[in-house]
Image (cartoon, rainbow over all chains, first blue to last red; front, side, top):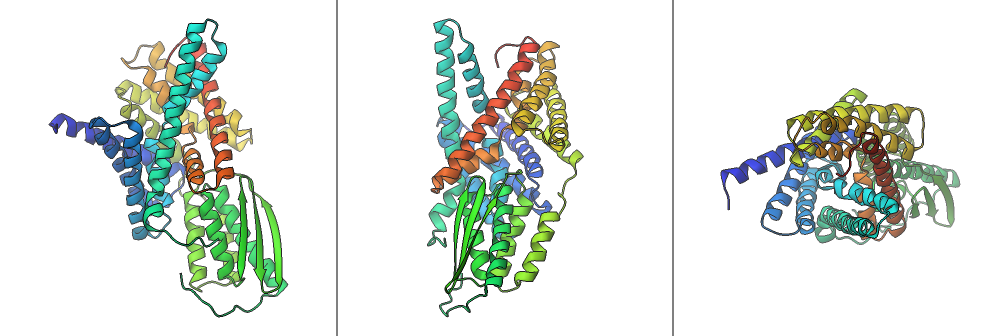
Length: 160
Length: 266
């Protein structure tokens, strides 16, 4: 259902993921003229992911589509600003990176090491495996998404 | 790319030495500053063949590049150690553009050398205070994405920008990168805990989760996955495993801070 609430949510999403991508773009020392493009990539990828998750699909699949959008935008911007697409895609996918899942996995590992009774150990083990698998799948989805334009449309005989 | 089937003039050994030196330099810049393996190989190959040699064989490993240049019957091989420095997209972009200009015949090996010198020595676009500010803002933005409220936003901003400052200072002192990460995560965690301890917000745990995101090696993990997908398994695996170690260091620092402040659960 498209309601004004939903649109407000997307706007919220776009603004803050754009800011996050901008911050990391500056950390990655991207050329100044590409900053705006990095911000747009970051916002677009996250908004697309939110919309698809809203439709009830899994986070992993939504990330794949979101990252593909970043990849396509990055390729288009790369032509426009004469720079490698990686400038836009690497900063653009930062809002999609499963940072929280990654360190929940690690926190779980440390809890597991210190668990004394079996029930606590079992729940820590579950936490580690679930978050770990989720982190891996989402990272793979991001990489496949940003590589999609190259893999699908710019196939060339390898030069090396 | 223009296919040119006329045989190239055989290069002298002196010229081959220059070709291998310059293309290895370019490859080193790319690998040091966060390019994926495919791009490194392709750029080195293009640069070397555009500078006049017949063929380039490149082996990219996680911390070294080996290149062999061939011209007629002559060949030379050179290895260079590469220590990753951190993502710098301006350098990646500049080296990429340089290789295209050489392919178009705009530059010869002498001008390539001065261009590479210029790229290596160029100062970063953004001064350290700008970086501190925007990285703090980026992590605070993440706290909004995780449905944190405004108090959490400001606590996260304070925690992350302080952490970024500490990271820069420790980096200057040449501490071990994993140690820097753990200490930085600890400091971010201590500041972010104030949201919980002082009961500043209804969702105080969000500050803890968001404040250490500046340390997550996002670019490295994405490169690891991309390298693996494109068949550069060794580099991909090593990048992935070192990314996992960094995540572990973050967890250690954060856990220590949470334990000291008496917070359990995230």
